[in-house]
Amino acid sequence: MSLWLGEILISETVTENWQQQAREAALADKLRAKAFGIAPENVDEAIAFRSHLLKSVLPAFSQFCQTTLQIEPKKMLQVLWDLWLPLGIKLASQRQQLERPLIQGILGGQGTGKTTMSKVLSLILNQLGYRTLSLSLDDLYKTYSDRLVLKQDPRLIWRGPPGTHDVDLGLDVLDQIRQSQSSVMVPRFDKSAYKGAGDRTNPEMVTGVDIVLFEGWFVGVRPINTDVFDTAPPPIVTNEDRAFARDMNLRLHDYLPLWDRLDSLIVLYPTDYRCSLEWRKQAEQQMIAAGKSGMSNAEIEQFVNYFWRSLHPELFIKPLVKDATAVDLVVEIYADHSFGEVYCDRANS
Image (cartoon, rainbow, N blue to C red; front, side, top):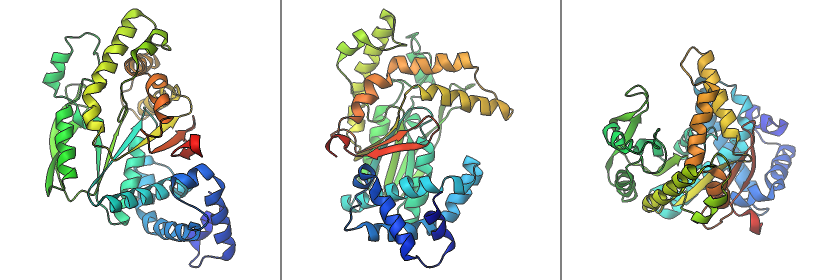
């Protein structure tokens, strides 16, 4: 945490020295400044608003860090200041301009921090007077019985790939929210049901939703040219692998109406997609250390490779982040989970 950021938390008045440091820091990263609409002519106003919001959200954020993340809040303050607060302000502004509920897509692979970001943004947006709904692509899984039918295809060994979700259910929920219906039944999914196979659980009744944070590992991902599968990277190596990848690519067409409901798409983009494998191993090891059941490294590799064979990040995510017409904000994620560049259109910056 920078010294000037620490100063705002302990002082009642903002010094000129602090203002200057905050101003320089906000403008130093040109890509991030552009992404959050910060320019020399509005930087002082932006910093003042963000510092006020920081103080108001800090109690809830500190509790979240301690109870959910199990980490000292001060270790996360710089991320809160540099990323989550300006992003929350950006979403609130978008919602205000829309004059109807905002559907915000969040795309990210395993371990990129989708769930954490959604929860922190909810805290921030609540302080700004907006009610948020966190909806996962997982909540749209087909029922257990419906997925048993899918398993007639022996390649669909796990839930997750395209074809295992109820797209019409998702369309119904998002359309009701977009139309500002007074109350909406939101589906929820219990991953522990049927010995981990998972099934629908009791839906949640929500009212007055302003912003939906709709996250998932392929939210917003679109079909690609099938020629690329001829020279696809591992683990797509056999003819059977390539056939599976082509089938999953074809099933993505069914999701396009769902993606059309998104008003905006954020991508949490690992600088190396293979980090997801290591992050999953770390998470499983932590679960085992805590006395819970977890997968072995061999099982994790089989699990992650299965998802890479269905929608390989190099084929589907990498080209997407370069398309300014498809993605509204990209947040790069480093191997240590810290974030790197934040941009909305790097090519034209």
